[in-house]
Image (cartoon, rainbow, N blue to C red; front, side, top):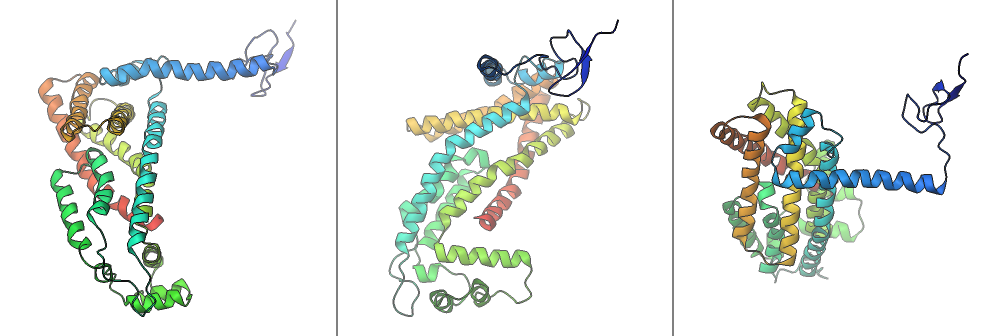
Amino acid sequence: MEKEQVKCQNCEKEFEEGFQFCPHCGQKAKDELTLGVLFYNTISNYFSFDARFFKSFIPLMIKPGYLASKFLEGKRLLFLHPAQMYLFISVVFFFITSFAVRKETQDLDKRLKERVVNSTSNDSIVVDKPVLDSLQIEDMLKPLKANQALLGLKEEDLRKADSIMKSEGSKSINKGMNFDFNEKKVDSLIALGAEDKEIIKAMGMDDDAGYLTTKFYNQMLKFYKERGAGSILQAMYDTIPIALFFLLPIFAFILKILYFNKGRYAHHLVFSFYFFSFLFTAFSIMYIANLIWDIPDWIDWLLALSTFFYLFFALKRFYGQGFILSFFKSSVATISFFICLVPFSILLVLFAFMLY
């Protein structure tokens, strides 16, 4: 005699009565929604993630390459999934830094706007005061210094940026804000309430300009009206996760080239997810420590350098090659990644300007 068939409430497939769980999707056969069931599912799902996270966090920090190796061995439920760990830690990282970024952008906008005074005469801007003082320059350099290792900037790059800002900032506002257009005419059009398309034509845009050129002039006009350096800085920070979304697969591709006979691309992607998770964790700890204590720069550089040695030991463990070969390939991978990072950083600034 055939057993009676019941239908799963979740996947709507039929199975024999008597099963406690659906053989097709795994949901409980008779799962009536009560307060107990509701809170049990919520708590069990939370602590399942929570337990796997803490079980994965310590090996991530002190055993380079261990989690990636275990994942490829098939232990994929004991530890947190690499993509899940990367997303979780990256969200925490950007959440931590968002507060300081918001304050820096607001302070920068406030300082710049305090220096820009509308004149009642034909002159658009008072020329007595410099565009940037030393405090403003320090504010603009602060986010670059805080993320110096992440952006691949050298001390020489920061000195050049400081020199350029001081050189340009020492000029008067009217002369320093050189947009290569007649500022008096543009200011007059703005005061008369002219349409933006008329103003950007006065700024030098051709009548047959394409979409990107028009967008650029519109953004330049917006910046000219608002002096929105802080908004550009905020937009740049907002686009960093997008940039990293592309940079992580590029890093995995670099590893694929260096270890072309060591598995599929997905294997290198697993390693990259865990390595970037470590990077975000290390920089989060570094950032929090700098908020609490005034840590010397040499300690920050030492911590940043430790990420290279973490990569070295992780590659050695994961790919099973010797010290010399692993050190060489970790150096090549690091240099290649920074070579890719430079054009991405330039595009990031342009993208931020177009979006702010």
